[in-house]
Length: 161
Image 1: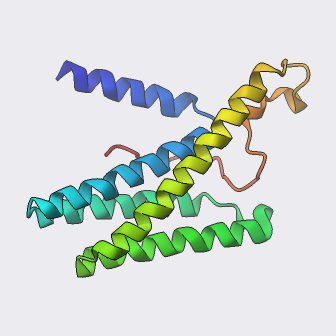
Image 2 (image 1 turned 135 degrees about the horizontal axis):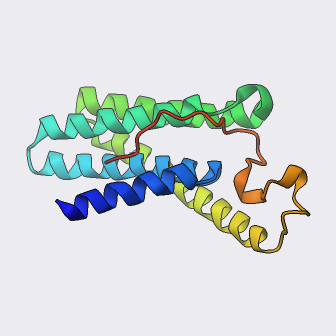
């Protein structure tokens, strides 16, 4: 029980202090973890738990999709939105049809997205060590802003899996 409380506190602190790109990564990791868990539940014959995991994964992908700023992001934002809409459709089909292939498609895309956001986080973290507060525009370190303009700064999500 105490370990669970410590994990909850750690996660809460990580989310509260994370820059936007890290939040994006955490969301994608949560959706991916839930999607993978679905396969385990299907193998165990626990369809009710599989459905629960898929619905939660859909909620997270929906939050990612809602966080894309289409006005600022232009064509790139539209393409990324289309990608996450496809993932949502795959997850919805997996729920309604027990579609392992669709679930696999969603998982593969989320894995690619996870790696992309990991690399971005690593790159921005490396750049942060080279920048002093005085050099950063408006006193904001690169890891504290979204250079792409695709992420909104809205809250209200849960990545608990």
